[in-house]
Image (cartoon, rainbow, N blue to C red):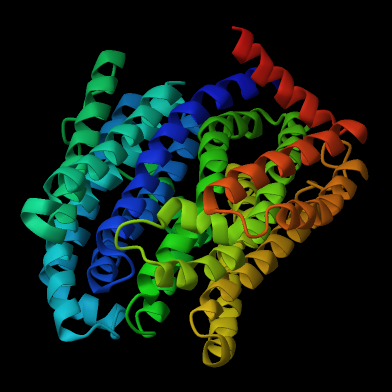
Length: 502
């Protein structure tokens, strides 16, 4: 476990920097365009290529790692065939989405007026070609990860996010919002180039075209297709966010995007690091039939998620206003923009633990070769519960209904995944690895602690309230965990202190 934490810590540091650049891009959009129509167009145009990147690319990478670890044949040939097949498929999909750009945008975002549509279309035509490079980058990262080169794949994301921030920062004054289209494409090309260089240094692999054969390639696609639904819950949420918020007038798309990205930040840092490192190890342990190790990973991961993300959600609930103002409240992001976004930040915060939990537990299903059940649960949660809640509440609550839909449906999805894992897979949250009474009690006590911290800093400026509240709440949280002997806090603090002294 210490070794895993050490690797996760190193990867997490790189991912934190990468995520900071990605989040800085959202802040830059807010600074330059606030919650106006141009911000809506930039965010809307990037929805489809980003969806393909994270959904199709993520599914293919997850499936590739599983099949690669199980294959007993020529792995080099498998890599060549996979590269050829993935490039051909994603290339065809991208071409079709460019050729039919108009109908695609009209179908998905029918709330756009003519001026928004014209700008969104221009941005989309620049951004859409990046999908090919983005999907290839996730697959190349998977190939690096199965060779234990976790740092290179994390640095590649850093390169992408940094360039996608710096190019618009430098050229928006010259080219206007279209600079974001240029940035999306050039950053994706640079990320693929970086990964190819890393694999070239690793040696042993060729990317010359090779016609995909049956067997392992069939298994790859058979596994990947359902994962696109079952493992892409968060991206389906984002897509539905954009579809419904585009119908609610100017600023709704941007406000929902800012709020969801702000609350996604803590979960993304943790989950990217954890899944990047643990999934290849988990897949290997499942292949070896080491059930004890699998159960240990499951239980310890659940506790760490709860320990880190539930306090984050409590803090966000009580400090959503100061945090939103501190992060976004400058430039064209006016007081009205803060007032529109902050309530959504509070509501989206309710879902960060459940979405992370879904991502984490789903990996155990995939490692067992079970992708059908997560697909079913995701379809029920995202496309039934989520949309039903939005439709029920959108009249009285407006854009707030989008956040409530995410929170309720992600909690339902977590419940279904936990229930099935316990009944059919022997992975129980009540096992000796998973949880005891101390951690739930501490998390419950953190709710009044958050209220106290919020009361202490009421009326203070955004900077003092957000950072002062974080300090007070953090001290209370750590103190409670120490008093009630929550063992993971000693492990985490010990690791942090060791790094500080080293």
